[in-house]
Length: 370
Image (cartoon, rainbow, N blue to C red; front, side, top):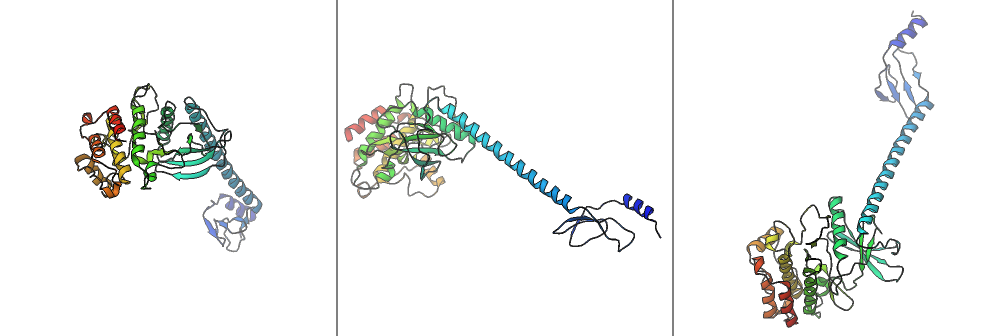
């Protein structure tokens, strides 16, 4: 029979097996059940009972491990929040070079109003006056740097604009999101595309307002400003029924040293895009003229250009190769699209950008038509 001393030496030399088995004890295995962790060492006798590891110690190790995981997760969340806060403060400081911060002036109880393609619009209240304002936040649909640059570019451009037909910039804020958001007056009449769905609305005075706003941009004292995304949705209507250009996220101040240029071309919306800008997406004055003609057609017909064409590839082919949109009949335009107005639109759609009219010539034509 094996002596106790020799048995202890054999046990000390036996390797531990760390495999896990639930509900039973086997030699050389770590057994886990619902109550405690037990180490079972090899034995020369089948009926030798296992040597239990203290259950309290195992539970303590388990609790310590869980606590460590929670601490690490909390540290990660805190660092992420700090990074977002620091980035937001940095963006706010950069944007504050061009406009004042309204963080302390806007009621925090903002209402989600509109979800557009690239941005979210909230309705807020200015505490000082009680007036309603629109808070525009660009959605995080592209890389952070592109979103930030686009927002800062819009703040920079809008800070230079003072005109009756341009939506004024009131300031910037990080409320309700952590992104730098643009604060403008609230336009309860909505955008021009929706506004003209009421057939009693005459689009011709709106078109005159739009061309005057575009003339102001192209002849700005600091150098021509290209809008880059002119369409009915980017024209807002005031309480008095005046049209105001907005959404300068794609705009470009041609003579500016502003360095926050986006990492990709200006963009624009396909159905309003000039053929020479389709491949590059670049902004240009002739491109704005083309888009203006499409916007005029949109307001007369109350539909988007190429509205009957299915699919972007088909629209793209029509823009590049033709044919261009056809003249809406009197039923669609309520007999407002006269020959003179149709000829004006057609001039804007010359395929050679150099043959399109200058904005001053265009404004003179429209002032005689209204």
